[in-house]
Amino acid sequence: MNKTSSMFVGAVALLLFGLPRSAAQNTGSDAKAAIDAAATAMGTTALQSIQYTGTGQFYATGQAYHPGGPWPRYTVTKYTMTVNFATPMMRQELVRVDDEKPPRGGGVGGYNPVTFIGGIRPAPAPIADTQTIDGRTEAGAVRVWLTPHGFLKGAAANLGTARVSAARGKQVVSFTAFGGKYTVTGTTNAQNLVEHVEALMDVAFTGDTRMEGDYSGYRDFGGVKFPMHIVMKEGGYPTLDVTLAEVTPNGPTALEAPSGAPGRGAAGAGPPLSRRRLPTGCGL
Image 1 (cartoon, helix red, strand yellow):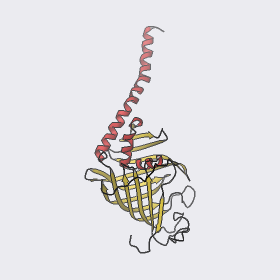
Image 2 (cartoon, one colour):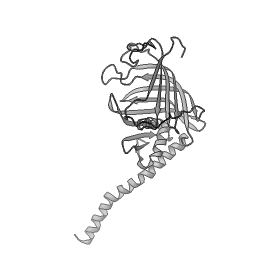
Image 3 (cartoon, helix red, strand yellow):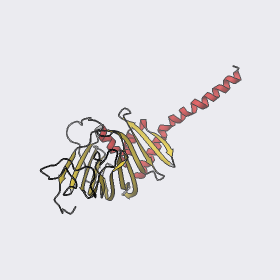
Image 4 (cartoon, one colour):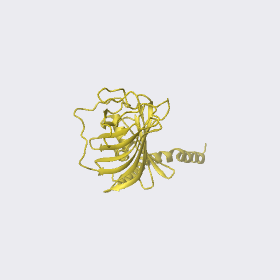
């Protein structure tokens, strides 16, 4: 091969291999720019905690009427979520009514002689559920990152693994955590607002399961933008669909981490659940 041919081959190799490598090296800085833009637009940096309330629909996961079917539906008459990003902790409190006609599937648990509910549907009275999620565990951290502001905080904390791409005019940012065990992906729109977040988690009764959050109807609360409509999905089916009435960023209500070091636990282990029966006609 003569000198001219060698130079030509070298130029082609540079185009084929050198340029993609340069683009890959810029991916991290591009991801940082996308994350920073979204955090600025949404007021994420100064957000330490948030509480929001609303009403909507709850779907009992793992209790489908038939294999591969949707999760059973309940009407949510009261919903409150409190998130402390500094701790980090989450607590979901809701009151649900078993008004699906006809009721199909489960979701009321085994019969409890103290509360007089469970075993069969429909439940005779509203059910109050409380779930607390410890964000210091791997599974808990991923659940915090599935929230819109939690996603941006998680992406910033794992910036070294963050990547960004464009899809249909939107930015798609992803990052990995815990040694590559989890990949969390979020989509931001032209206004740099988080519209969608998803991650794959190991769930006891469904195996590797896609967890998703869809966020729309953003409003501004003192510089913090938050969606007024939230739809959470698990395995392709909704688990929660709520329309918010109130949002309080950095309010006096905060969650504290329980004493002692957190247990790692299995990634698919569900958060602790507290359930109680409310008096009929309680007005909630």
